[in-house]
Length: 237
Length: 244
Image (cartoon, rainbow over all chains, first blue to last red):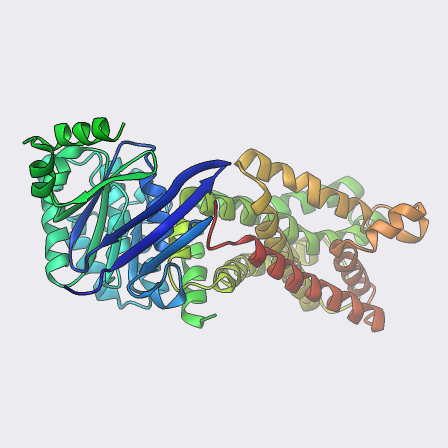
């Protein structure tokens, strides 16, 4: 077993006087597609922000690819997609990617490659502000893919996408994992859980379970992952 | 800090401007319009127009770039793009310098256009070199940009950011010596004005207009440059990789 891509020990985060993560420990194995699942408000985004190093933390340690989260060494190796599409509405799709690619020191060919990967190659010259929500999210995802990051942290990348596109993106995630990347993908819908190699189930800032989908089924005796989640919540309560 | 990242930021800001021709038209057209009104109001050869024209020409870019930068930066903070950039190798100074370069270029165009109008058509006269007026205008634009970047950290909404313009810029314009000579001000106002960067920006322009490029002029320019550096440092301090 290789070293985990992410190792978190006793992570505590306070936001606006509220303890959002009251001491969380977990691991994400390298080369996996790990789903971070939980209802909205469970602390998924805060955990992701801590992993990419933009979250102020009250305590604990977050090690990413062998370095403390947010250290200079990891900034070219981690791709991050925020929940709200963080791209410039007043630039075209391609101009956005050329900019983020430029910041990462990537050649222009990389832009065309990631555009094709998120199926936006025909929309390169459109202004981002004229795109639909789902298209904007894909521009944001494409920006995270620039620079072939070793770790991709994607906050709800498939929200609002049509099923065909969603399937294509999950295929892309697994393809990237096969090429050696580690992916941490959050979602608040359990039906995406089956597409993950491993799951982190989060509720009210606490880790309910860390398991593969089949382990989760076996442990709870539920075939349906939504029901399995409920069973875990009730068992913990 | 790296040159290619700074350049990427500057190009990106210029591309954003290019998609917004109305902002460019306003940034270039409004100072020309105000200069024309001023000349028509007081008359071509009036001492008021001749005295106020050059300093105003050099201060316009300060006001424009202060506003444009504070709003652009606020958008960057609220849209999540700043958070994304903070996960990349981009250094804070790259971002600030990129903005500074982009808006300085816009200021060059603005200052040249207004100068051409004022010196060419409107009959504004300046005893010192005209290129120096343009150069000072660009320095003031950079000062405005850097101050705008800094105050954008204290605004949560665009409404608030817009209010910072009268709050930060107007007192400086009132106290810089343009309306009342600083020697004639109440002592407490004169003391305050000594701490405002626009006082020195104004004095440098007024001295250029009279061709009094003495030691005091050099001091004025040095203070403006020091204020730019200070504002960049303060601005960089407000850009945090980690936020709550």
